[in-house]
Amino acid sequence: MSTAEQEEVRQIYDPVADTPQRYKRTPPEANPPLDYEAYKSTQLRHPKEPLIYLPHTLTEITGPQLAPTLRLADTDRDLTIQRDGMPIGERIIVSGHVYDTEGKPLRDTLVEVWQANAAGRYDHKWDRWAAPLDPNFHGAGRTLTDSEGRYEFTTIRPGPYPWGNHYNAWRPAHIHFSLLGRAFTQRLVTQMYFPDDPFFPFDPIFNSVRDERARQRMVSSFNINETKPNWAQAFNWDIHLRGPAATPFEQAF
Amino acid sequence: MIFEVTPSQTVGPYFAIGLPWDDGPLIVPEDTPGAIRITGTVYDGRGDVIPDHLIEFWQPDPEGRFADIYGYGEQSTFPGFRGFGRYGVEDGDGTYHFVTVKPGQVPAAGGAGLQAPHIDVTLFARGMLNRVVTRVYFADEEQANAQDPLLATVPEGRRHTLLAEPTADGYRFDIHLQGHGETVFFDI
Image (cartoon, rainbow over all chains, first blue to last red; front, side):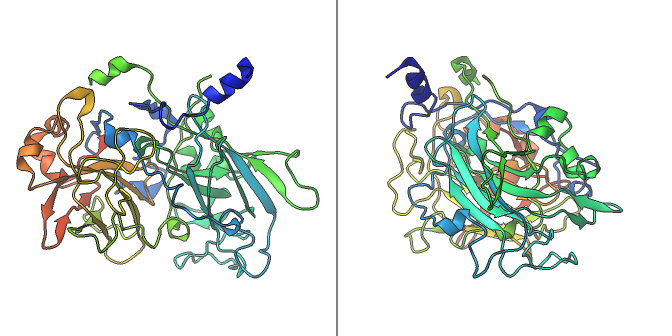
């Protein structure tokens, strides 16, 4: 094995030997605040007391590993073949890798998505937006990352839609993502956006991430090379979950 | 190379399209001998129930072993034990429930003895741009709770917000996101 190959193998978690004992704390500016005035629903739904520091113990560095018991079908990762007919809209392939902040891939980890249809309408009883439902599109999928941490979904590009936060409020088109990672500390629910969305400057949820570079980490990129001729546009989006904290002396906490 | 984390965003109002699982509330199979039910209601800062939230539990089995395959000590061998529960409340009275077994004790951080039995809790909802994390402890574990190093760092007047109270078939653990009796949340 060449040095490069050895390095590559080393970059993939050994499920037994490589068991982090602590995870890095996320810098405050990397995440949105729970109290964010521009997004009105946060007002009564954020704690006012300070958070209490929780040193990582076994409960936090372990997490649900569902891969061995999950039985997934092609229809789980292809949202365009879940019903009898083809859904309306732009067919897209969304793919990427799940890494930690050290760039190590997380394999066999569950990635779940849900989204609106091409008209920006969710197949949900509470969504009253005056746009049509698509009988051929529900909008939910799930998959496991492969041995290199890669995931891939085929779906329809979701539309933007209005909401009631303020006058003329519209959400930029987005796909909701849920990740379990491999530890309780790594749990993440977020949204993937599309490049150059004209609604970005006006959306308080997108802009609740105050750091411009952090915000851009939620935006996918168009990929002409992975775009399939006469079939589907490709978008790439990598996700980085918290990585291990390297220092054993921190365990003194 | 060091990368930065992908930021969190709200779970939004329509998570029920994709996230809840039929068997999500079953941390153990329903017919497990000795299974208990943990139920609770989630309230906002006005004291109103939150009718749309997603709550997740993560816990060890009664022997203090986790359903984790990554080599953290002995893996749970408790029959049917998933250790993980997910309940998506969509409407109605804002109440969740899980079927589980009482967790055993696991070591504390830095080798400082054992922690009191506890369950890690994640809560998501519309209007929350990130999750909040809390823990279920058990009101009838007075001795273990008194020696728990994390509980010791919680102001005494707020510790009760982390204690699940015994009921006829298990425990009750309500969550107050804000205001009077605000639940203790953790920075993890």
